[in-house]
Length: 131
Image 1 (cartoon, rainbow, N blue to C red):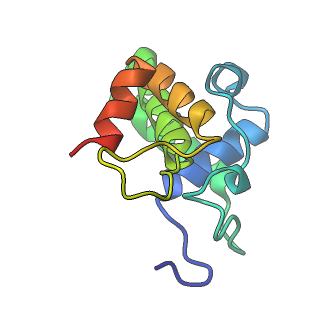
Image 2: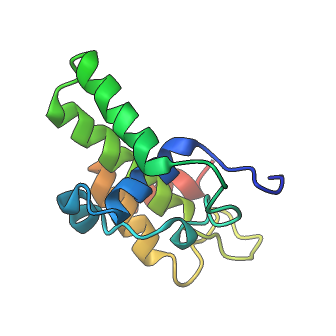
Image 3: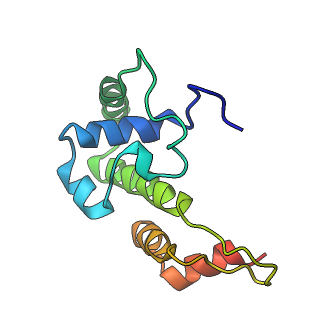
């Protein structure tokens, strides 16, 4: 359950706002990022009055730099977050089949998540459809 004006993990909104504002174009391209309404995890509440996600993300980046997280590691954090967003769009087919089956239209989600996680799509699919 998610209440009105309640959002999931803020880092997702912050990262997307930064990217939509022109930041990290290479991340947008490589991760095929859209806006909050493009992701199942985020679409219930995409905006909250008084919250400046772009500014908040600048603080996150500043904090990462302050504690000397190397740029390459920061990149991996961002691509992992993007992978989580894509994986969240994955849907299971409505079936009692064992193992669970992927719903039609979820291929892109599993392929992008697998790409961003650095694993084979079939292995990721197996990990989410088998007990």
